[in-house]
Length: 206
Image (cartoon, rainbow, N blue to C red; front, side, top):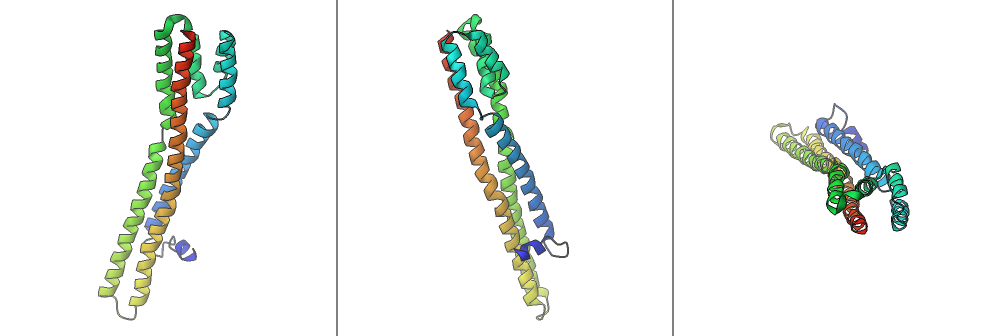
């Protein structure tokens, strides 16, 4: 670990790769935190209670109260259901059109930036690979051109560059890819739930 930290020193060869990989990893982490807050906390928390309360009001035909409840919520699914209840007097086609309009706005908000996190993970890996190649080139150059007395240190430096950049690239990429999978899973579940619940409400009001 200490050797890796030394690799960030501008006096060390290959330090540029270390800082670039770290910068890319921080960008990916920033978008990961932002997406976690929006998808898991803002769009997912309290969803079950809202759906239960909303369903009871719809079953009791208390449509005004159901609409007020949905409008008071910031959940994406609440906005879809609110559009359906608000247009219940326009028939099935009108409710479906209103639902689709809101769905086409809310669904992309759930998937936004997730692909960018995946790109950051891929870039981190590729930058680590570039650092590895640079380290190997440095090593081969040392074997060919350095005096015999300087070769051991030059070889050690080249190998340190190759291994350090590879390790840092993987340390940045692997967690980001794990979070991409989790975020995709949660966003897809929310989108499917919007479609399913929206259709059920349309059927119940038709």
